[in-house]
Image (cartoon, rainbow, N blue to C red; front, side):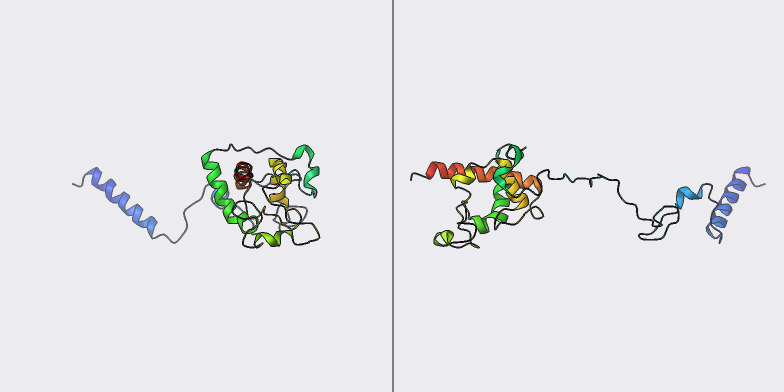
Length: 196
């Protein structure tokens, strides 16, 4: 006589095989959990007043990871309230190395390797004093730029100034601050070697 265990095993195997070849889908107890009524982009949806599936963000919403620049639109660097923002990064070796790397990539073509305004795009020093509508090009080691706060230099990198356009799309916020740390080191070097 066939044991009860064999009957159970054979019936279980038959049930499994029968389910594998079934042409009907399995029964869903909560179909909205597995197949939500999602809408395609720009598809009409009569459930909302504007009859579209696209949702507008609430007023004042800020994208994740984005921090609006509070001094956007100021054109005169010297009239920034409180001289702009303060640098949140410390002048340590790691930050200076990153600042130097970003400076050499984005800044040195115009400002030169040592911030003297003689980069490969601008040309040698005699061309710096060529008459232009906004005056001679200011170097990063000039008295005027040395007197700028970190926030003012950050503003110039972010918004641009005179012939320099904004670098906000090329240089991330963190790297702008680290470039400023490196510029300060260039200025210190210029102060030490100015009399020599």
